[in-house]
Image 1 (cartoon, rainbow, N blue to C red):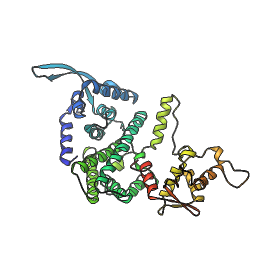
Image 2 (cartoon, rainbow, N blue to C red):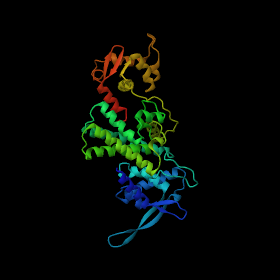
Image 3 (cartoon, rainbow, N blue to C red):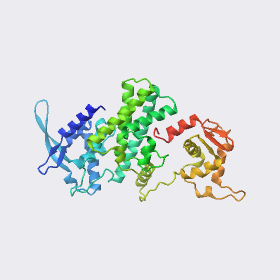
Image 4 (cartoon, rainbow, N blue to C red):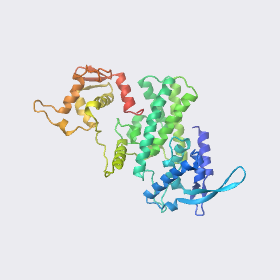
Length: 392
């Protein structure tokens, strides 16, 4: 989206707004339907219903934000009366949050209506007030980002961004443009995140929406302009990120790095699963991930190796590091009587001793068997990048 397109969208949303006698802003649902690119009133009514339910759950009087009215719309011959809803800015904020993020106007609206959102008595209402709905939005947008990141990688490869180092620089340029010329490591640092943290998995829905916009618009630019050469691809990703940042500053005055940090995305998924099962919600922490040790241990072993500059780790170090990433069941932590070892450490050592198995990650070329330890290969790094990191 160019700066002129951003200006046009700001002008369109402001043109559609109205002011009541007390100075408060409001929009008509029929107008908002067009701005959010919904083709039919029947489909948009479902969005309005979800937004009204969110309003009720946030302990806000629905009638203060969703007022049923009748509007006059022009037809080819005359005018006719149609049902409509007068929406407060807070109501529009909820409508945008419940809308289809894949529609071009929605990502913009989610940033636009986050400005000056407040409860009737002046109490701030943040975009994270509805935790269950926020979880749903985060999971939805995160999955969309995952899908379109893969498409972006393919578009970047078509432009000449081929190997792992090229892709890392390409990714870094996009984040740099969006986050004020900061590297990924610097973004993690100012957000107070570990250096191996996945940025996307700690973003709230508004920040994810900004990154979704960055990803989809960069992909579109690379394909539309048929850019050739990795330097041009780097610059394109940077420019799109910068323009998304400028749009956020113009609309809300809030850069992405100032948006609230969210709990790990797996916490949102667990809360959603508990809600579906009807079980009681509990406080989430950032405990290590529970995995199938037999099926998935090798993936996390590669992740640990990838955090090392030289990609090498000793077997002893790997045994010590893995519990920081994965949960070890009690039965695997018991000390074996026959040796000063544990069932878990034996499973880690099996990664090496079973290297001739056709399913072993060494046999498959993801790691090399090095005396005393393991060394991640280029193929292993590519796997980690696709499975764990920002292009996940």
